[in-house]
Length: 343
Image 1 (cartoon, rainbow, N blue to C red):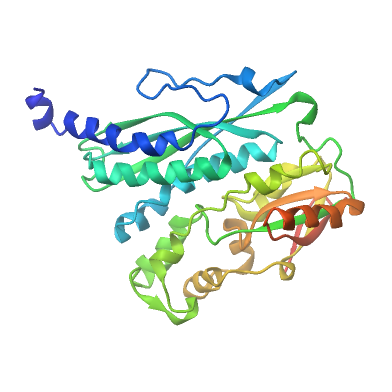
Image 2 (cartoon, rainbow, N blue to C red):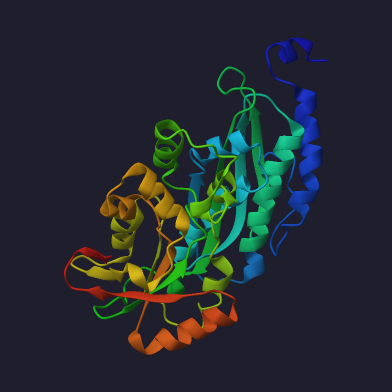
């Protein structure tokens, strides 16, 4: 059956095998409200299970970017799905929403079921970490569009929050303290610059170990998954009045922090107040990149920032510690209208 379609580059049987392989991974993401809809035309979720009075749905969508090129080179595909989830769920978390479900989209040049399974395993791992259900997805085999060993991954997340509990900076004020949560490394941003500097300009070997990285394999360091902040931050929602939050992604500090501020407000950020992973020094050294540009591209070790009243700092950090999350006092809200990154 479908022999001509197979000759055109689309293997339906491989597609069926991929679906069979991923079902167990999808199953472990089931949460309250998730309905059995894998294989249906649309993913279903029963929002009434959460008993919201005035629910607001907050949506986010993103991909993994050219970090995928590192995964191809390393032939490692089991964590890239975590990145796809993280980039979406961390964004909806900023507005006070609990991620409730996720859908993925995987486009491939040729369907390799064992690779699809590894990608979806990562997606499921990310969903488990963020307590969101994987309720559907799509795999598209697109010969000629992609190389036979290449693929692209994107995701779509929906979160929900009571309207009265939305985080929209309405309570933000000058003097609020910034508490930062550390990143796990480069996360999923700036990889076009990373690849240019390390591999195109300096011809480094992603499979090699480097003393500057404590003898770790470079490719493994770069593939470290994006940190998912959902559980520790969510643990604060009913206990601390968080005035505003920011997910530090592409555009680094100078583009992302202003998104949490009111007009006319600024921040000071002390970069010595939080640890800087060695991978950033490695990239900066090989690329001879100016420090300001580094902070305008990468998270530099700070993946998530929240603003609280000075009186709530100790309580906030104590609760985060109880949730297993390190945190640092990294700065304050000002009236300068500028992002002042001090290094």
